[in-house]
Length: 119
Image (cartoon, rainbow, N blue to C red; front, side, top):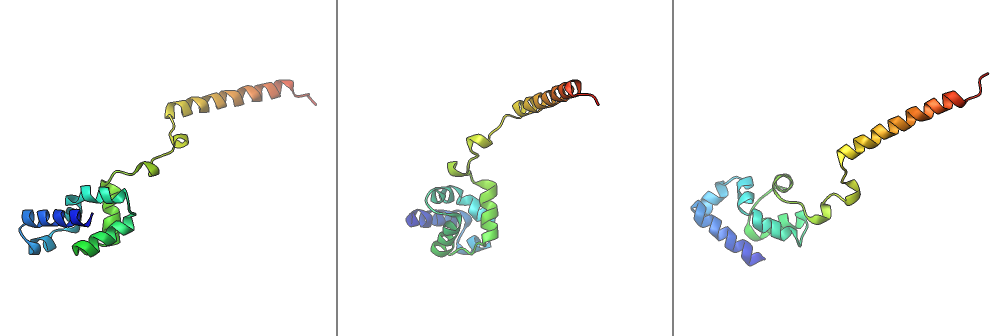
């Protein structure tokens, strides 16, 4: 994994035009260039661990805020964090059930008012 990161860094350095230009590059653009590698690392490590690897192995100085915001906006979430089956709902079915509850409530109120003993 570390070799893959170093190889990718070398490719970026060659494309950008040198180490000095790499340091001038915005952190978000740098993360965008390494998006695939970050996605692969997230399969094995947490966000914090990936950030430490990027900062230590490649010599980047990316803040947690920038990294977490980038990941939230640009990376696909893993299947573990996907919404569960019970949380996936069809809005139209929910609306129908609400209407049915309203109908049920109305009919219950009608029944109670007709069948209550009068004083």
